[in-house]
Image (cartoon, rainbow, N blue to C red; front, top):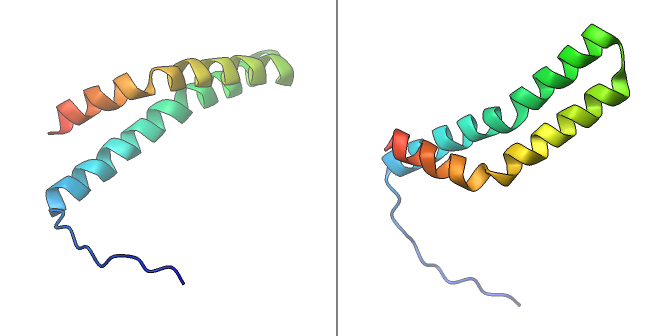
Length: 78
């Protein structure tokens, strides 16, 4: 049987709120620009494949910088 220690840590509501806001903004930064490019290319040209490729490339480029973006957002929010 697995027994987990009953270690309680006090986390302030300010830290939880800050974490939620940073996570929300990071999710929007990671998803909205690639989605906008995908939909923009798709509706302008009608080419689904090109839109998907550009959207994926932009998403993974932004994902590569996610740690830096997270640090900037944390500094701004605190």
